[in-house]
Length: 116
Length: 109
Image 1 (tube, each protein chain N blue to C red):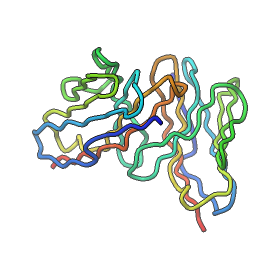
Image 2: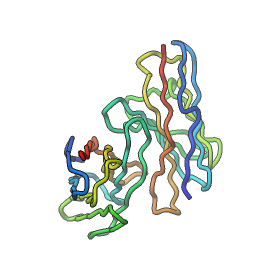
Image 3: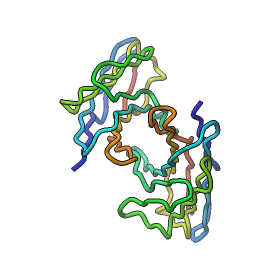
Image 4: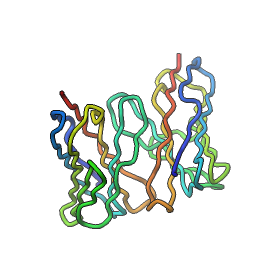
């Protein structure tokens, strides 16, 4: 149990375009989903916390108008990187939390975004 | 402030035992997690401690002392595939997990 999928796994886009990343909990309902980004050889940096049906809570320094988060259901959250720039190139990882497994966060496989 | 410290890098030999330490200072405590992350992949859950003591799960064990703000991950009978980063994370007062910078473990034959 506790499988989280993420799509796409890799995406290359041109500067100025928008990219949508989907995160799904496949076999459980996630009370909360989280979005992280990770630069090479660095740890995970939390971008935002997302609860179903309510607005996401963004971490300090993360632009909410640039990184749009929609948590449409208890099994789906999406992150849209708008007007992407090369400095947005990173590894984006979502996680979903379920109280069924002692509040553990389970991570999706990640999406590697490259902006040209 | 909130702070999680763990060594940056460690090396060990195949078949050996290695202990990765983690100390933390956080406002509130809702459990300590260890994750394994191979290069280019997302973290996978290894263990969760909320009470003091040792939790054993096969070759991996995790220990917690809440009074000392200290945990360790013990890996026995090391295999080459254990070469990865190991992330210590603490659940604080909110929903969020606070991650350490990770310990990169290299296992040599």
